[in-house]
Image (cartoon, rainbow, N blue to C red; front, side, top):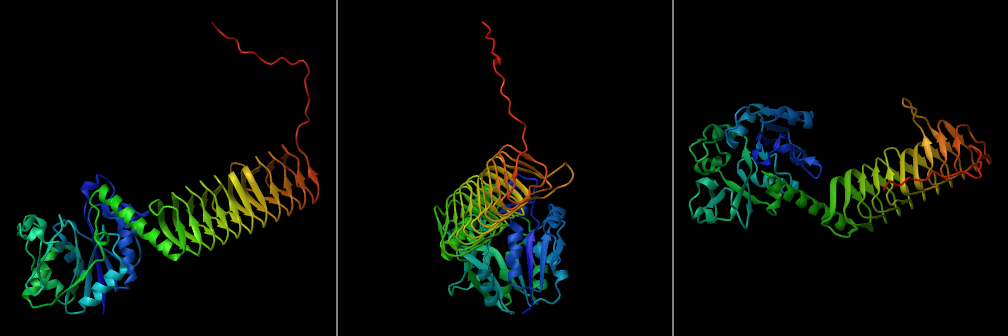
Length: 456
């Protein structure tokens, strides 16, 4: 079947109390609307049409893509009116699936089930059973349990308000009926709007079957009209991700204290402590241990490595059996080979650290290539930037860099070479040589230390 998806994203979201359009408020580090678009893409539709209004240009600038057709709704006259704006762009639809840009937790499996159940000739309706359906339209059924209509909260009678089956707003329209139904809508209701939900009564009157699918839970179809509801969606998303990771082989110290803001793939026997944040694309192989309060973004951590507490990794590749942290910062371009160690309060940037090499503490290593089995002492700095250009420092296999060494790039320390502690190295050191570059110490006898004068 030829499926088109219409996503309604024109609302202002005044209750967010924000200059940011409502659909751009993030859940798991990504705009709500982007989550919905991703779900739509997973259905492989013939077209995705996004109806925008308030903050339209900002929405487009944020999410512009070749596979999206942007449709402007200049006046917000209701959901039925919004869908009607997209119809001139849809000429060959067997089905039109209507989604909402502020409902980011909708599952692709649920949408597939709804689309399949509706088929070409039926109206498909997604409902949800709710403990408290306040604010939702109620599903009205006859004695044979067939759907007859949807009544909005403000238009419902006291008896209808007792119904706990709520309308999610998500539905599938048969393509050959959409224009007829939407052009027949009336705004004779409490809101003075053209309700999309009124097409259900039109379908019933025209003897068109209404096929119902139900969402797995309320959270799946929850929208966000204010920041309280946005926080509920955030925690719901994170709960899903925690459950997914545990199912795949991760042990979480506390599933409620994990944030995933991107895509995380893992191996087996992963241990993740509390308050860890994953961002972007993260790959974690088998038997990795991640300590508390780490932030890991766009990085790969290979089998058997340990990332200790309060470490930050971004754009880094950590090899097998490596030891990182605590309080380490691996910036973009950092590559650690097997069994390398980057210890506490070490910052690296565009640095390749060879197999078994160590930078144990209190150092900055940027634009550097370090061979195998090297040791970089505390307080080492690669002076890689002259204010305009970046230069590379090369440290050979088995080299020993004494504490508090400044390596002024471009410079090479050869294999098995050593720098004396406190040196400022400005010239290459040949293999197996000792480089000493520091002022000679002299002791002044009889020197009087300044004494503070205490005022009464």
